Length: 176
Image (tube, rainbow, N blue to C red; front, side, top):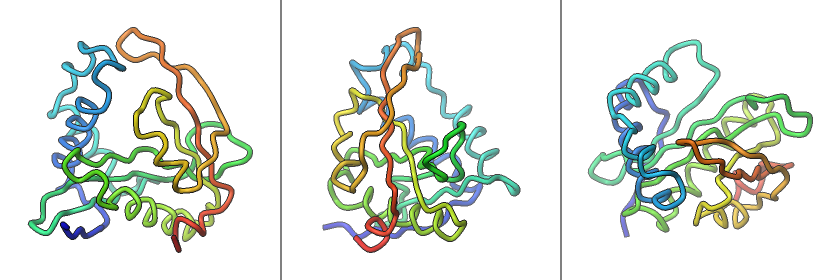
């Protein structure tokens, strides 16, 4: 079994994070998100977006998971909830793990770091939005998330449904 290390991302990780995000979207969302949208995902644009997001002054924290050879195989981004929300203070903005490293505990480790970071900031609850057709949505339920919201979004000209999973306590993610 591979071993992984979780650390806080720096701006030097922007390209690796963008690559993980694009590769994961293309492998997970094929047949769900329009192919044209998946094909249009740009490493250059993703790298610049993550470089900006990782800049000083951002309220977002990003963690990366590295395998034993130092390759970034996953990441998670979190911070204060982005939309008007009464019940949840923190948000898991994104979490992606490349296909070869899925099922090895990387996602659980990343969620644990996210929960610790949010609690350090006084954000004791968390929400994440997940495409309803995401084949891995059960992952959030296994971690104690409850389906608490639903909304429609448009990606590549197609209307898709998202589910919001919420945690009223982050303790199980930290200690579990």
